Length: 357
Image (cartoon, rainbow, N blue to C red; front, side, top):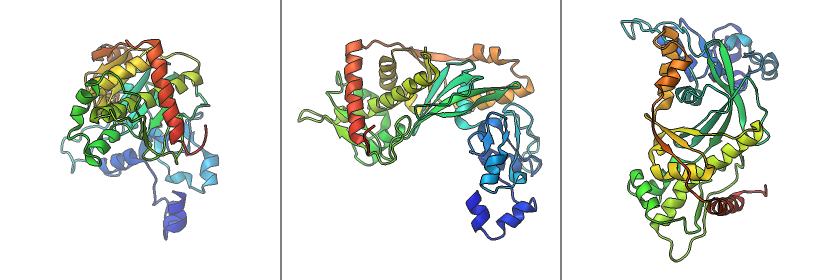
């Protein structure tokens, strides 16, 4: 935003005059849907702008001054569950109210009903995004995780730790589109299950570097441990396992930061329907993995926030009773095999890193 103010002709003058406004995508959508009547965002989206103070729950004057950004440009910040105005009549004649707003991963956290400290969810999409509710505490991570606002509803803020993994489902797309190893992503579970183990093969999908907890932008993807007996199934299994290994690293980093053990992991996203990956995830973590009824838990979270605001649901307890778990994956892997697999994975990660960590 500072670049725009400094480099676009007339931008700074327009900002000073109150004619130029800043917002995340939700702010833009709300402003346009309401016909310019509401200029606002919610706490969860504001917390990811790097201009919001998550301690005081307000725009940070020091950061605004540092980047020379007028405070008048910033939207009003509201609770995620509440009144954001009505859709303009020229867009929808019945003018429905806008009652729920949240960032995508925070909405997923809410959709999983992770309302209590320690409760954790992981979204397996193009990448993986894991959030743990840390309650009233803002945890300053020593393991490359982000402290953020997780839930801002019912007059209360719950903080969260987040770890982002760059390549998850996109790895399967790469196997299909770039390499022709599979013709359809849906066949990956069958192929991965067709062999009894990974045959010592590991796939580190650092196509764009590695995210949490490694944060190495110059890491590069590798496949190691291939032999003359390796097959298409070997590569596919290693790719599937890579999602679980990366998620394992993030979850263990979270446990170290908060000083407690996570008891279960709630999952959503397209790859959460791959039963091979979910079982392997449970085996690695040695905790149950809970598969929700819908892969679109982010949309459910947004609906929950709106429903609470209009009184469709009474409180968080009712939402917890409404949660639908369709399958629970319980760990079955031996300690020896788990440690052997993880040793191989971490050796592969070290090979992919640009520097020794």
